[in-house]
Length: 257
Image 1: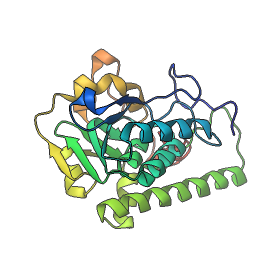
Image 2: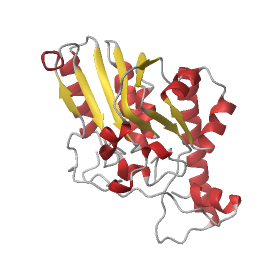
Image 3: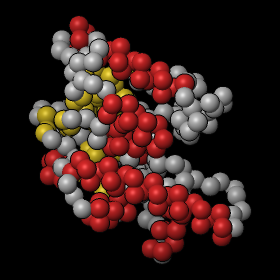
C-alpha cells in the first residue's frame, strides 16, 4: 500500500479522497448515477489499494448490482487510476451506461470504454492521444530514456487493445490516431465506434468547460470550440521546432494526461 500517494495534477483533493459524486435513483428520477467530473484522480493510484477500494464500494453500494449510469466530463488523469476504474466497472455485475456530458479525453476515454453502452451529448468531444511522461529538471542517460520508451510502448499497446475491442478499428489505425492526438465530435465518436449513440439537444460545451479547462493546456490540437479566453485558455503559440523535435518533446511528458 502506498501511504503517501503521488500528486499528479494541481488541485485541492486530498489523498484517498473521492473525486467522484453519487446520485441515487430517487435523486435522478431514473437509475443511479456516478459522476466523474474533472481529473480522473489528482493522485496516482500506483501502489494505492485504498482509493480503488473506496471507488468499488461506492459503485456497488450505489448500483446494488443493477443498472447504473457513469457520467463523464474529464480532460484525463492518471492512467493507473483510469485502468483500475475500468477494471472495477468491467467486473460490476449490472449493466453500465456511460454518458459523456462535455468531454472525455485521454485517460477518461479508457474509463468510458467500460460501458456496455456509451452515449455522448451532441456538443461533447472525445480525444485520444499517446501516453506520455513528464521529466522535470532531470539529467537522463540513454538507458533510462530507453526504459521510459519501453514503458510508454507497453502502455500504448494496452490502450490500443482496449480501444480496438470497443471500436473494431485496427490497431494500426488506432495507433496512428493516438499519435496524431485525434479529437472527435459526437458524430465522429459514433462513426469511429467509440460511442454508440448521440444525445440530442445538449447545451454548449462552455457550460461544462470549467471542470477540465486546466487539463486542456496539456494538449496541442484542442478544437476552437473548447477554447475560451475568459477562462484563461489562449490559443497555443505556433511552434518553431522541427517535427522530430516536437515528437521527442512529446515523448517525455506525465503518465497519461
